[in-house]
Image (tube, rainbow, N blue to C red; front, side, top):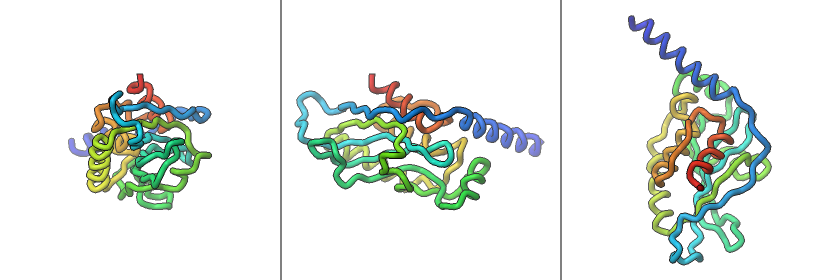
Length: 189
């Protein structure tokens, strides 16, 4: 009985992983900015979180960038948070489609390079909203020790951040570009 249950669980995990890889990325989409600050808020407070996806050798990566923006919208000392296998080797990445593998939660190669951006949604925040969001991101980074493609992947990590801000999140089994695009469309009105 236990062997049958284990086989079913493995088959389900394989099916979910395979389903996530069946679509293709579109051409990079334009930037989109929403403003979560109240109308009376001082617009000089330029805090933001940007939900992003980027192209990669695999099906891509989703993550967030957060910080302050200058008057032109440029980032001032941005921080990156995302979930990915904690290695540059492909072996743990492949294994992570079957079993949880150790993860890292910081910036990865290509996260800040415009050439690799495939979708994004920037949300402008008040200082209080920003402080609450950053506190949640730091807690999430501290507790996210494993990556597994069909259970807790980069989209699931970003979805946790979005839900903590009161946003709806799409399925974590989408390709990252589709995930970020649907996140924006579900919440930006």
